[in-house]
Amino acid sequence: MPGDLRDPEQMFPFYYDSRYNEAPNQFEPGAGDINKYLQSISEEQTGKKLNPEKLDNLKRILDGKGFFHRNPGEESFRCEVCKQIKRLVMARKVARNVRSE
Image (tube, rainbow, N blue to C red; front, top):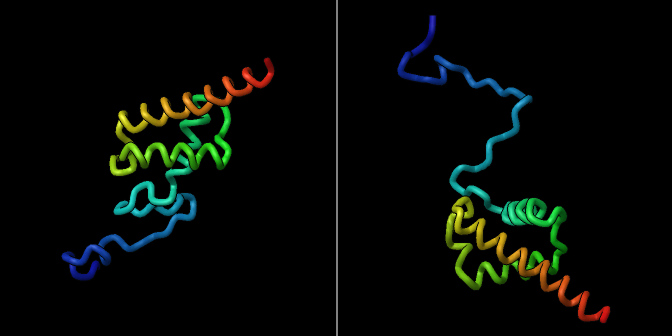
């Protein structure tokens, strides 16, 4: 016979299943994971991760334009990140070609 039916903990006891990862904090989505998110976009665009210097440059550019005050899940945020990554990679290619000539 169950206990008090108004108490959901007695109706459905807590069970920890080790097959599932702990859920992230829903009140701080993406906290501390912005580097991983930017690196994943970089891997999709260029096929490789950004080095720490370029990652810092990218974060400084995005912060200067106010994109860190937006939701990183928005399409405009992702488009801006893609545009800036392409710009950073293109600058390296241009600099390499200028040196070799």
